[in-house]
Image 1 (tube, one colour):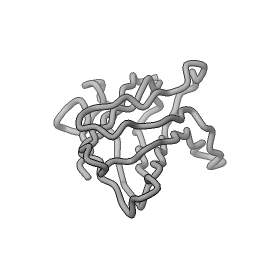
Image 2 (cartoon, one colour; image 1 turned 45 degrees about the horizontal axis):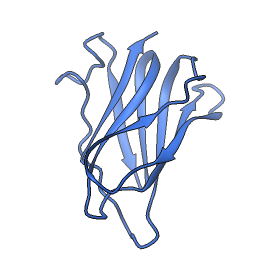
Image 3 (cartoon, rainbow, N blue to C red; image 1 turned 90 degrees about the vertical axis):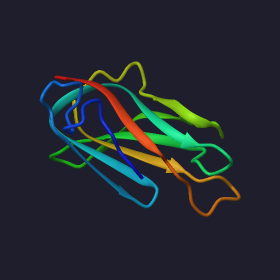
Image 4 (cartoon, helix red, strand yellow; image 1 turned 45 degrees about the vertical axis):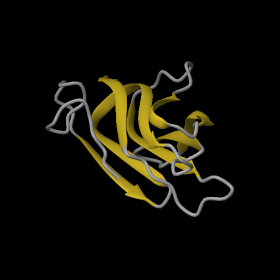
Length: 122
């Protein structure tokens, strides 16, 4: 899986906030250098039954590790970018974002071609 951000140097929107990303199984975790306000996550899927069918996103508290659900929904089986919406009532700054993906009934794996986080530094 390739994970990209708005700038080639791994920063968010050129605001000087470095982010690290790691994928494990059906999860992708973003850890930001500074707190950010999230808008959406954009995922690029391959279509042809190869992409995930759903998602749930969590803000992870850096001290307590408490996870708060901040977005949830379905993804279409199509090639191209899709928006994973963050709940509109979530306005807290976030330093760690966890995205869990759902595999389809007849799938044993899935592909994500690209991910982008739409956010601004808090």
